[in-house]
Image 1 (cartoon, helix red, strand yellow):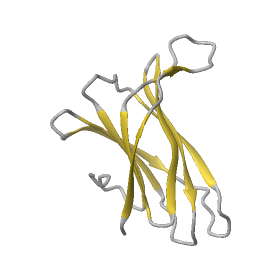
Image 2 (cartoon, one colour):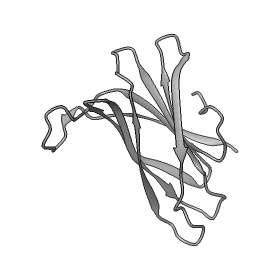
Image 3 (cartoon, rainbow, N blue to C red):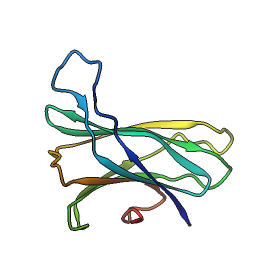
Image 4 (cartoon, rainbow, N blue to C red):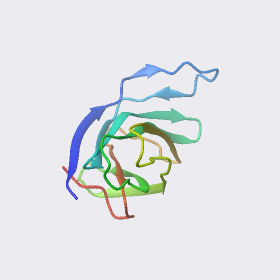
Length: 129
């Protein structure tokens, strides 16, 4: 299955929240989804306990839906430093719509980090650009 790749940069801004410790952070995020799906508005937010990734996976065709969401933390040398995943559901074949996600990690972001976020049907690594 060929994945479309789009590189997004999170917009640096303070999130409207009661806590001053929660803010969107400016980090490079590479996103990919299988043919017939798209990733939308993927961002990383610093929380008191780590980093939260938020976005949406959107159905654009009747293709078989992805069932896993994976986030990979990539170091300066391109090596995967850490990864986590969660199940993804709610993308019915009969409707064109988006399913939002929140994936929380305990990762502290460093200036050299970048991330990959992908929607897949298996637990393998995201496709590198």
